[in-house]
Length: 374
Image (cartoon, rainbow, N blue to C red; front, side, top):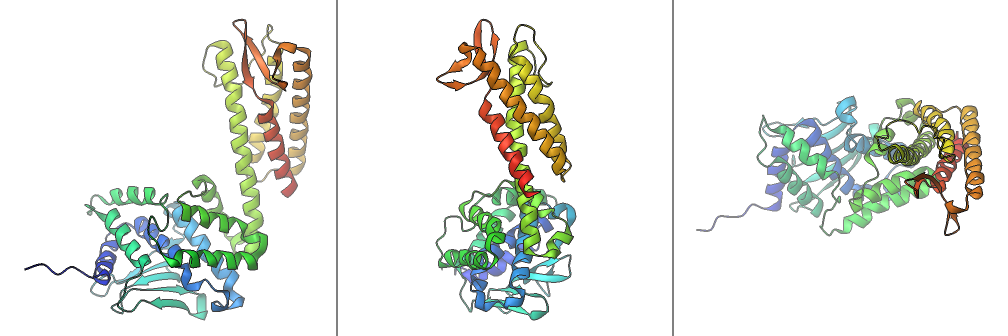
């Protein structure tokens, strides 16, 4: 006799039971992905009281980015309690085991989700005897993450959810709710204006399986409580500064890598130190001139709160170094390649590209953008 196959609802119930056996981190990542797929529940602005829509959305964004970026593993700002009764049938995301934000449940005998909006109650969807695409996705992700995981091998599940963060939210599944969930961000972005730009881009990255740089997401998640509590405008301003610093750091890193390669190739040794002055290569003097203000720039933005006056002086020094480099190159016709000026160190009788002026220009422009928002 053929065995009766479990229904999607029964599979969902079994999955929630498995979810309760995983580590807090694994549970939180899985529930957060489920939350982000279920934004269709609250996609229309008239379904959320206007008085709480901004703060409520920001709470959802903050919880999600804090969990997915890994920051919550350290800060434990958000918890994932569940109501077991005779089995774990309702899983929550909450602020430090206090104010609940979201839950997924089989407590009523059927899958449902609920968004909590402070003392105002919230919004939920009970899926009757059916399981949605989103419910089935949660089930499949839990099964994949929990396979062969026991009390002594929970780290295996943690490694799997770490990788899962880079998968598309809907993976390869089709669902009408995907477009509707994105509508939540479109509606909120329309209401929030430029203050919602980052979050719309952030969600699109999760949809596409191409999340924003996790290092950048960590910095956003670590924004001080006072800024989050000040509201979306304050958070947006802080994110703009964080992104400007993050971009500048990457451009500085590219330029420093070129400087180190120039030193390594000129001397035939490792390039872990700033370029040295070379008597037989006058152009190398410019590498030294660039390095010091570049180092000062790295130190200044490394404080997390750059001083505008000091930043302005450093930018002026970098601009001066760039102009000096152009002047030296123009005196050496053999350093002009295809009308594009390059800075080089002669090595073994042939030219070797050590530094592209456009990389220094990119650092200067990024520093100016940061100065403009400080």
